[in-house]
Amino acid sequence: MYKFLALSFISIGLVACNKTSEDSALTINNQEYMPKHQLTANKYIYEYNNIIYNLPNNSDQKSINLKLKKLLNTMPSNEDNLAILKTKRKILIRLGCLEQAYAITEKMLTKANNSKLQETQCIFLKRMKKDISLIKQCYEKTASSYLNEINLIPKAQLWYQYALWGNYAAMYHAGHKEYKFKLLELINYHNNEDHRLTYRQMYESVVNPSILQKRIDRIPYSPECR
Image 1 (cartoon, one colour):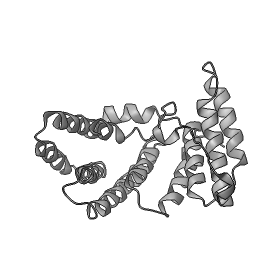
Image 2: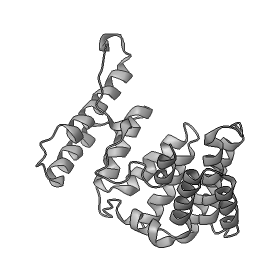
Image 3: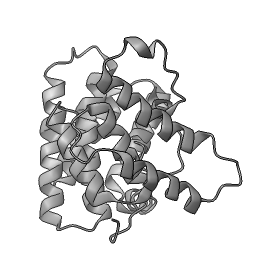
Image 4: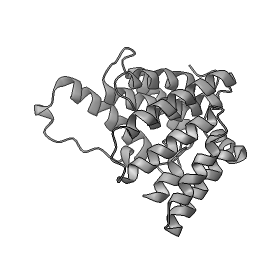
């Protein structure tokens, strides 16, 4: 769990070649009993997984991208189904179409508060080298999103500490450098050495700009993406 926390800040499906459990092969059962919109969503999810996981090992990225573009063109542009939006977003990220992925994510965020999803918006803005004021505003919004979660989580739960960390880190990235000390307090809060080491690594990824930048630079980005 703690290894997941250490990597979660950037390993959120943004690096094109990573496989996640969310992308695991989908088995569709009893389709005849599913609503039409759910069948449609499952179709796109199945085709996406088929492209990513069932291609020969020697398939190059160009051929994969061509298949993804073809699938993307079959998906409705005005779709409001969350499952379809998620699949479309994955495709856009893999293709480096971050402007479009950003717009899709905004649409998803109108449906439900999701702090990690909101945080990826800031990563997108950084990768696209948007104005620093926009990036700071994004992190302020991310901090508020984490705060909303904190207010709903019992303090004894592990996720409470992670949400608190997310709030502090977002405030730090928004320009409130005093939150660096709050992050250090969270590290010292943990008595378990393994946990403390994990949070120390997380701390370095927050306050050391070169570490974060290396991860951001790995995200595919094509400014001329269509």
